[in-house]
Image (cartoon, rainbow, N blue to C red; front, side):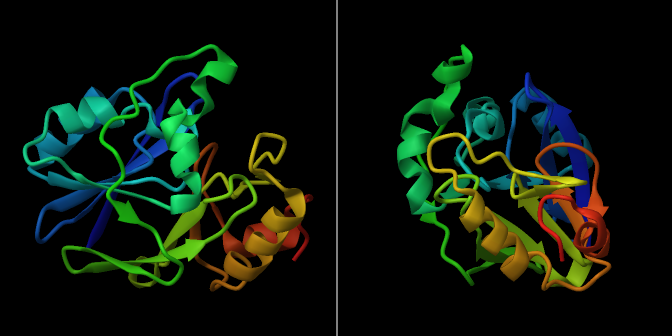
Length: 211
């Protein structure tokens, strides 16, 4: 069974998600936003082994806790990111634009590809390529749990900003229509900021991208 421990961390109040297969105890961190020690402590308390760091995109507020997590693990976790965001990752996720400096942690070793299936124990995560907020933004969909980790693509009543380098609203809108609004109505949307919502709620009420 998929277990999810959410955190809201860092200067941008970013949502990070510690996820695990409760049977195998294998865990991943989706967008290790900040304060990696807090995420580590929760994994250790539950007896989970963090084997993966999965980034929906490479903005600094989504990777700022990665180094602290990786430094405490042996072997290092496998780090996954879409190749279109590698340049952004190497630039520290744009932290300098907002007056921050971060250690981005270990270099990504796995390239996300649209349609790729990631295994976490017995649980399958489907990678969907959803550019618009950044050039390499991806979401992670778990059909068995009716849950989608959607990064900064869409929020409850809002959408990801497109005024930063690599952003484009028309592309973002297409990504939402093709890869969020096509999911089952009751799919949980766990976003990078703010409260969770559902596909049905956003399709009906989101003022930025009407269903």
